[in-house]
Image 1 (cartoon, rainbow, N blue to C red):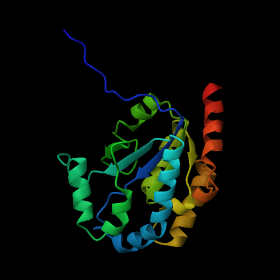
Image 2 (image 1 turned 90 degrees about the horizontal axis):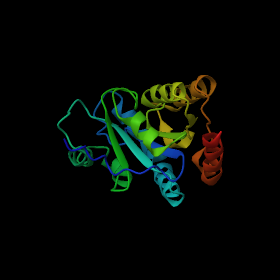
Image 3 (image 1 turned 180 degrees about the vertical axis):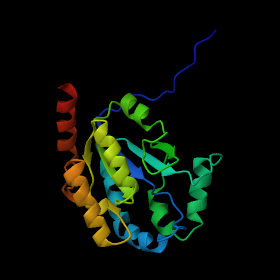
Image 4 (image 1 turned 60 degrees about the vertical axis):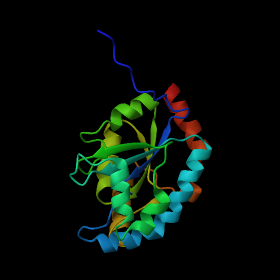
Amino acid sequence: MRSRKHAQTRPSPVPVALLFIDVLTTFQFPDGDAILQGALTMRDSLVRLKERAREVSIPVLYVNDNFGDWRSEKEVLMGRCLEAKGAQFVRPLLPDSEDYFVLKPMHSAFYMTPLEVLLQHLEVETLILTGLTSNSCITITAHDANMRGFDIYIPPDCSCARNAEEHKQALAQLEAVAGANLKRSTLLKLPNLIRTAQILARS
C-alpha cells in the first residue's frame, strides 16, 4: 500500500506565530454593534502588526469560528463577512495565500482543532494573540496556550471587548493568571521577541 504524502508545510523560520482570532465575522450576534465599534479602533493596529510580522518571517495563523457551518469554505466565509455590516473591519484583514487558516467550533483556538499539531510542526514556542474578543475567545485560547507551555503576548491595542472596562479587566486577569505579556503592538520589538523564543527553544 502506498504511503500517504504529508502536506507540504515546512517548519517556520522563526519560533513565533501571530494568531488572528475570529477577525472574519459578520458581527451579527448579540452585542455585535458594540464589539464592531471596538474592532474598528484596533483594525489599523492589526494591519500594521501583520505587516511587521511578515517582514521578520513570523507566520500568521487565522483561527476562526465556523458559525456552525462545517460545509463552508474559507472563501465562502470571507464573502459572507464582506457582505455584512462589519465589512469595513474585515476587508483590510483578509487572509492571503501565505497565511494559515484553521476553523474552530468553540471559543478556544485549540479545542477540537488542528492548531496544536500545526504549531508543533511549525516549531513555534511563542504566540501573539490578537482579535476578538479579549474577554471571551482570546481569554480561553490564552489559558489553553499557557497550559501547553507557550509564551503568550497579547497587545492591548490589537484586541477588544464590548467596552473598555471589560477589555481592561480581561487583560489584567490574563496577565495575572496566564502570564501574558501586555506590551502594546507598537512597543513589541519583534526581532527581540524572536531571539528570546529561539533561546527558549534551544534550552
